[in-house]
Image (cartoon, rainbow, N blue to C red; front, side, top):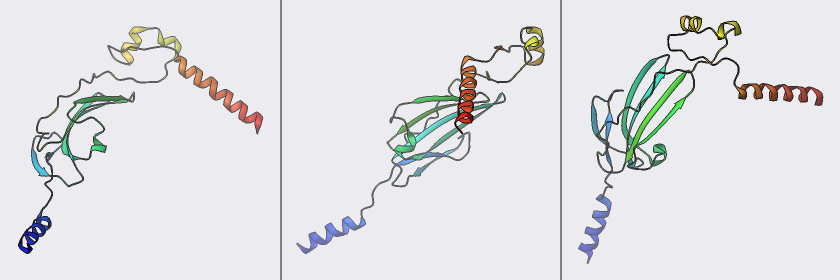
Length: 170
């Protein structure tokens, strides 16, 4: 009986939890990746391909690593795409998270991210309606919308009202 108890106790003390193994990139293009043993807090493998466009310069980065389910923000084993357009910059991401050893070997395709850029600014009204001048100043394929958008006009009206009300009340 003592022998069985000793063997059980020894096996419990010597038992180590098996951690997940994931591929991890060694550079931004992920041309080299190695399989690493993840910390116990990282229970998913993650692969993400990101495209960032700024001033018509596109950069692509690929990331593979151990991750926590909270930082994954997407369902496991579902390839998910999302993008952000800030006007002067665009970002597009494709991500997948998975839970088996070395499941993040593959690199995800780059999400289509057009080179169109939204630029906001002012131009004098007498030039706004002349396409030849706009092409010379901006670019050959420029699309220009003259006049302030309705939301900007409403925002200006609300700001004027708020400032007037504040001045009256104070």
